[in-house]
Amino acid sequence: MNRRRGAVTVVAIAVAAPLAAGVAWAARSEPKAAATPSAEVATGTATVERGTLTQTTQLSGTLQYTGSYSADYQGQPGMLTAAPATGATIGRGGVLFRVSDAPVRLLLGGIPAYRDFSYGMTDGPDVRQLESNLAAMGYDPHHAMTVDRHFSAATAAAIRRWEASWGRRSYQRTGRLTQAQIVFLPAPLRVTAQPARTGTVVAPGQTVLTGTSAERAVVCQVDTAQAGTLHAGDRVEVTLPDADPIPGRITSIGRVATAASDGGNGPDQGPDPNAATVPVTIAVRLPRGFTLDQAPATVDVTVGTRPNVLLVPVAALLARPGGGYQVRLAGGGFAPVELGRFDDTSGRVEIVGGLTEGQSVEVPAE
Image (cartoon, rainbow, N blue to C red; front, side):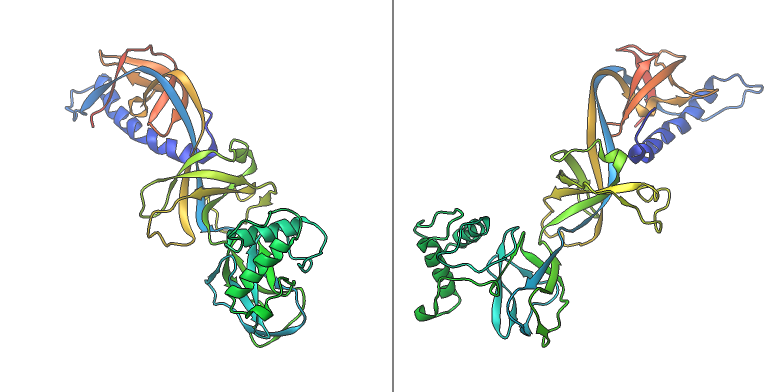
């Protein structure tokens, strides 16, 4: 039984019950020095069948907000006059903070604002990123702007429409944006901390807010050997506290391994403290009203299938004197069996030798 460490606990639980019952069954057939009556164990039968074995492994993780971002100020020194409360979420176009009462707004994208935006500037990917945001916010209603690397007159017109939404009068609308006015981040910002205190002077490049994305996902720390069996896009099943299992999908597997902490991990509490691990992120659609943060999660991953193999219920297995396993045949007598892999999902085990398709074996009655 060559099984992965992540699923050993499940198998041990599955086998324990039939072995206990098997002691009682075996006791019935052993000769006794004295005919002492023993309690009968109710049994049923199961047929040895061919089918597909599903190999699964189980991961432990935590439901948490994803990403780690910082909102830095890139304007002239000034006093921080306003900032959102911890836990607030700032979306595209929203005000992140105010410096000398001038708002700094959030736009989405992975390229930092490294220069000002105005008509006549050189082409670049940051222009495409800006235009994509303006279009997404609805400030190019006539589709006059081409989302590309070039800052055009239509781009300036879209900026003026955005300025109008801020309450600026027509003569105040410039069609330009400076680094002091915007911050690009990959996702809406859920604020977790404010390193710069309101009422103090902030300088160019200073971090004002830190936070995460507004999206929650399950993150598992998986040892590097086990991570090799996983792939981005794999479908999984996730179990959260007080909720039915829900489907999930592996979205990313970390490339940088880190050593697990020595504290808090017992033999049954997760990865080997000495093993290097990588983070595995799993996207889920949470049940409506599920508000827990940092909730523990159990993830069942299908890592392979074996078609056309002989299968019997794990409950049919009995301990064999001297080691190994056997089953009790429905017609009487015991048959030693050679086991393959276990299917934790269906509660069945592969039979490599000792039985043939169509035979009946005894199992504990339900």
